[in-house]
Length: 171
Image 1 (cartoon, one colour):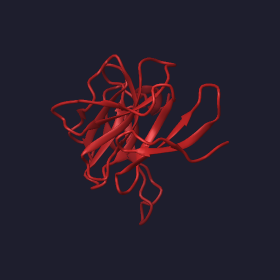
Image 2 (cartoon, rainbow, N blue to C red):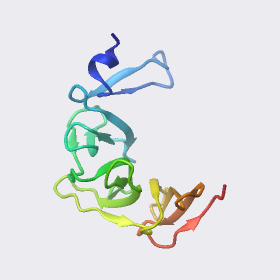
Image 3 (tube, helix red, strand yellow):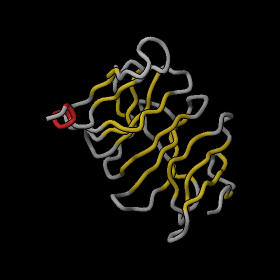
Image 4 (cartoon, rainbow, N blue to C red):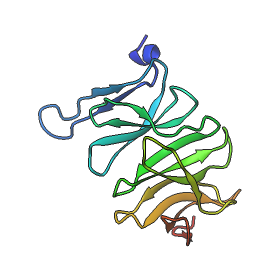
């Protein structure tokens, strides 16, 4: 049996890229046994990580300090599944992918960052599947993967308010 068989995907690791420990794995965060922890993204100031965890109420968005401590649930809607969360450059907002169920059309939503209140709103067009949005360095734009139903997947950009969707690639 491996450590994965025992614990599941409930840990996060970092790998130094320089120095005597370069390339070695170091576990810095652990969740409950069998509670998956995926998709960590650093906050722009390097003080926190945002990630997805299945520890309670399905796939929800969680936040922790960069040392793995103080793990707190950010999203609180058990009827939705969440994936690929990302910070705005000013730390004021979090953008993420939402699904109303397994196999549902993904949508991009944004919520002001507050651990006291989760108040998301959907961005973009109702009919366009959208996922994996990230902020531009200036925070004014979002790039995301989108596709017409039955069509090719492409990269799109839109304003951080959800207006002005433009296709960037065509495959």
